Image (cartoon, rainbow, N blue to C red; front, top):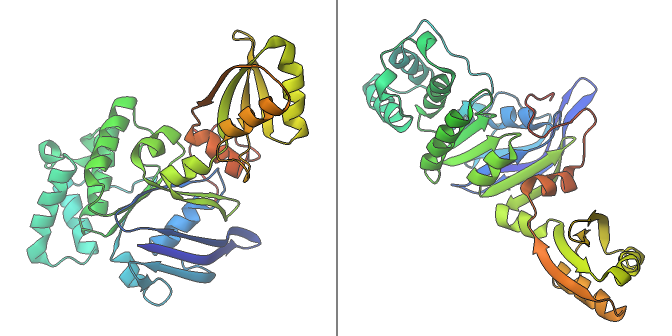
Length: 322
């Protein structure tokens, strides 16, 4: 549904997006991840038809963004991080205004408003002023405005920033209801949100692609955490052997269990990290009391690919430079 090939975009001397290539399948819910300043917002705005790339090719639903930007915008519903609402309008009035901007014929506007109001759970507030709504309901109005033109692609940029936990859960439930009907591109710093909602991932850093593919594939390709408990007499020899054979990225000791937790780099000659550790222990006559995989989080895999970014101290922060 979205095909980006060698996209680039500059702001003066700053190259915000640098030769970025990825694709998003039709009907996928895609998590779009990157640290602050990675180029996420710039890429999103190019997909939404707001910016033109300086170079490269972008297709949305088979439509070339450079040749037919209006055709791209007609396929895209966009909910930016800061939703522009008119507080003096009633919910219905605002959606009527947005439907007109989308070019819907007057005969289709009322049915479009009804379907989006129902989909977004706005039936009880449809005649209320936007200014009287809570933050969560305002976000629902923004989503309804993005959906009123029945777009094939829905772009959500940090959609739950500023919502309380109850509102976040409700919004994720709403997103789950929309999944499958259209392609969704979700940009978020909240790894739990992406992990629970998305089946496709695109990770970028410094304007370049670092990983893309199905969530399952990326989780499978990520560095695995393997928990190993070694006989105390073999512990130092075991750690030295792992380092000598370049099998580990780091070792964290768990004194309570008198063991070690290894973050293991997969080797092409071995089927699994467990096999790597087992074969090493056999070669060096090391006694293992425990050998099992530990769970690897999406955040750990993201940090493995993208690495820490200067100035970033929390993946749960909000806001973005480029």
